[in-house]
Length: 178
Image (tube, rainbow, N blue to C red):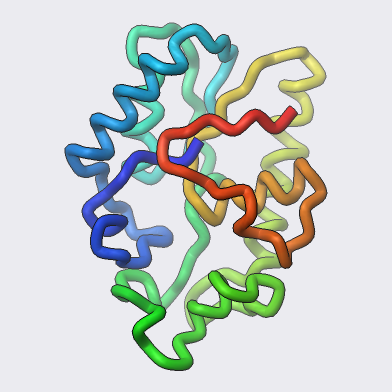
């Protein structure tokens, strides 16, 4: 599940690792998701430590006795010096646009992560945390971010990086991966 909306989502500002809280609409989305998914069983929740994901997990799981474990490997992709940029598509030759239009050609920007680095950290999370939980037949919820979640979807479903965005990671919507 991707976190609920933030003020930066509303104005198309690139968040990345910048720790932006949910806005009121995002809190309402997460609370509504909690009601919508209240009958879905989870044994454990792994969550990004960024506040927008933490708030989402807390609201979605409110009133349920489900442990939430925070893992730095679930933080959003780092966009380095481009974090906080607004409407990148209106900036000619902005390197961030490659990430959204041709992710297979994105190599990262100053102070940010490459696709390889993103896949390496989320891949180690899957191997070290999710694989053992699934072997124990646990139902797992992961609450995170658009790009981070897309990297997990690609790895679990063997989707090539060229189709990185095809999963359509929506705010506060569950995606069943296994």
